[in-house]
Image (cartoon, rainbow, N blue to C red; front, top):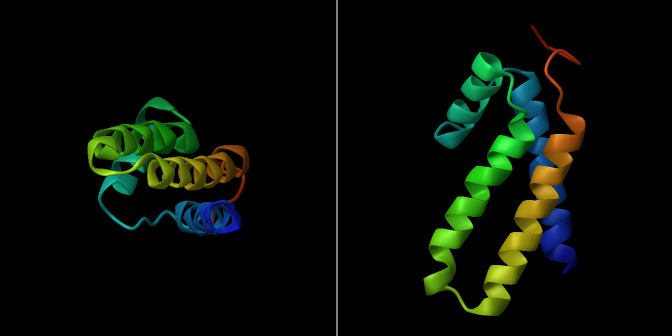
Length: 93
């Protein structure tokens, strides 16, 4: 439990730092930042929706316990991102 929540919160903080400096890890993060800039969609909510789809696609290959811990970690990460990242609040540029 602790590892899932703490790891998710640490990842959320890392994504906030990256997003505020207008960088990403590539892949879906680029899409999330683009959707935020283009349509004003909140990055944390979009990232959460994408993570949910990925986790749902993985359910057939995971046992229930691992799927639950993955959901807990993803919720912690996306909650930290959704609550703390607001466009324009801080920008390193």
